[in-house]
Amino acid sequence: MRPFRTPWALAAALLLTACGVADQPAAPRPPSGAGRLVLGLREIPGKPSVSIGSALPRVSLYGDRRLIMADGRSGALQLATVHPLTSGRFKKVYEDAYAARRAASRNSAPPDAVDAGTLVLRLGTEHGLDRVQTPARSKGPLTALDESLVPSNWPASAFSSAPTPYVPARIAVIASGTEPGTAADRPWPLAPLEGPCTVLDGALRLRAEALARGATTETRWSSRGRVVRLTFRPLLPDETDCGAINRL
Image 1 (cartoon, rainbow, N blue to C red):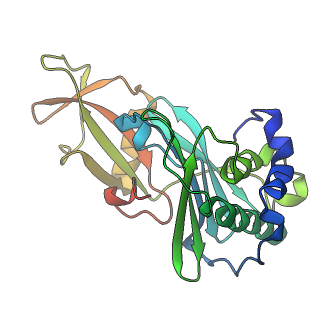
Image 2: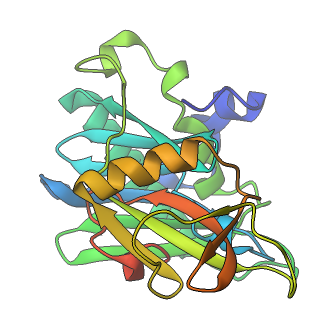
């Protein structure tokens, strides 16, 4: 669960209105279904590393009203929390995102500096996934939307049940290189890693998660004569393979 970060979150609705969002057309019906992405919001850093670039999105909302929020790490394992929303809150979040997307698309621009980050919104519609981006440091409608999506600031009536840890069906093990001559801290005990990204499910997923919890993002592993650092990334309901992780 993301903590309250700045007073800006309390002014999110006012900023959306100031940006002209309140005058936008009504939102269409959002996608439905457990694997249908309704909203995805993530920040892409200007100078990403493998671990940062493969991080879970800040927010992922699905058609079955599950709001999945990135929630830190346990060792080297990325974690997320599921917040089941009521139909009313689900509708409000989608309408806010639809309005923010329309407002941001009128002024969509690349980051204003080489090393500046980008805030990216993916929004499900009847035509598929729309995408819009703005500089992460701007005080525009996407930033207002991001700051408003803090479940800890919402009333209990926003949720249909209590939050639970996200349990993925699959996990991606993402390898990044180390400096030549670097010694390994431990061997990789499962099947040899295939290329830069390997997806595991079933019992192998559980074993990989246990290994991740007992390691850090700086732990060096040896596999097939290579020494690598590993990022352990749960796959979200709409992600089936490694190619989906950085799909923007």
